[in-house]
Amino acid sequence: MIETGIFSVIPPILAITLALITKEVYSSLFLGVLSGMVIYVIAAHEPFIAVFSHLFDMMAQKLADNSYMIIFLALLWAVITLVSRSGGMAAYGRWAQTKLKSKMATRLATSLLGVLIFIDDGFNCLTIGTVMRPLYDRQRISREKLAYIIDSTAAPICIIAPVSSWAVAVASEISETNGFNIFLSTIPYNLYALFTILMVILVSVTGRDFGKMRRVEERTESYGSSYVEEKTEAKTEPENGRVIDLVLPIVVLVVFAILGMAYVGGFFSGVPFSQAIGENPTAGLTLGAFCALVTAFVLYIPRKIIKTREFISSIVSGIGSIIPPMLILILSWSLGGVCRQMIGTGEFISGFIASSHLAFALLPFIVFIIAAMMSFSMGTSWGTFGMLIPIVTMICSASGAQNFLVPVLGATLAGSVYGDHCSPISDTTILSSTGAQCEHIRHVETQIPYATLVAIFCALGYLVIGFTNMPWIGLAVGAALMTGTFFFLSK
Image (cartoon, rainbow, N blue to C red; front, side):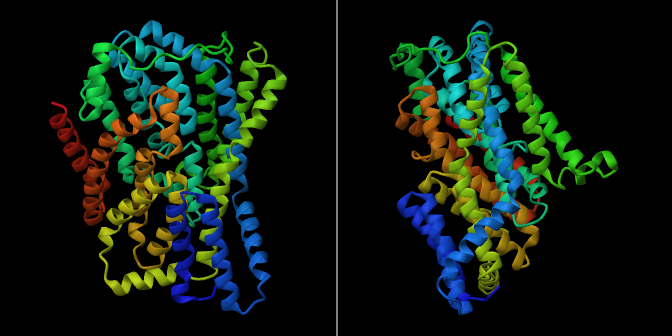
């Protein structure tokens, strides 16, 4: 590693600035990595062609270091694609229409289904919206409410679910060898995800609303849905699908992923469970995803729900779906690598913070605000934490603020999800309005007041956590004040 002084902050600043201006993450990250290589080559007095040599060496190194994660994501998306084509979601919808008689039951069932489908946010939004939309129209619950519930049980659930694509993505961004254990430690510090789940429960159980959502709900209650139901399209899902076709592969995935992590880590050879699951978690998760894939084959093929040729093509198309998020991960891994291993960004930033005498207790609050603004502007939580996690880990590791690493990482993830939740250009926001078949801007307008109310008390919670380093106090204070404010606004 070569100390490059103030030039070491150019790559992350360039990547973030370009992403905010262009709203395009891929080229912004690439140019950030490229600029870091240029700085390194100039400082090391190497020939210019070495810029590209080092660039692709870094990418190859990061791909090798995270090969198990890539395999897991490929298998996971294959399982998601198969489950979505099995007819299990349609079967759940048919069951729901016969069992759910009250509005509260319908809202809670939607929330519970969102929690169940925690393995991917996009799959969550589209499938739940499609299944529950007819029931919402029949019971005169607005589609904007449906969009809010499915959006609020998508990313906020995925970001705290250990068996999900989000978990391994976050763990891979953390430079520590026990990145997965650190991710698990961030869960009680991820206030936005936890408070959002609480808000969904409050809205679902009480039926109370405020702001534009209240007006939309009152209009729907009086006049029915303002949307003309689209024409029925040709059904692409098998009609003989059953609820078990949805539930069983997911249950197998979770159970065998946990068993796989324990097996790979040596639990069955005497290693303590808490230590075993953190030894090589992505290898264990890969075993779970493969078992879910085998389960789907045994469940679907003999009953001819999916033909063998379609089963294979679904696996291929599912694997193809991981390419866009994988590009973000590879580029962010490379950006973190060049900053940490080659140009000394962490050392420079930590020295600057130490000389500025910034109170470390304010770091969770400040990082939450920065992550929220970045994610809102870019419309991507993955791109945001991909840029910020390497920076905050370097700051905490090199500046004597190691005790604040987990709270700051939790704040990074929370801010990233909040900005993504509100942003009109976020893919999850767009997919939520698409799944609910409501006007996109109306979904954004009705959701922002709820999400922002949650974020305000998250920020307060991070101030409490920063000065106490006790997440449960921040959770209790924030949750109590948020609940009281919700009842006041919705009275």
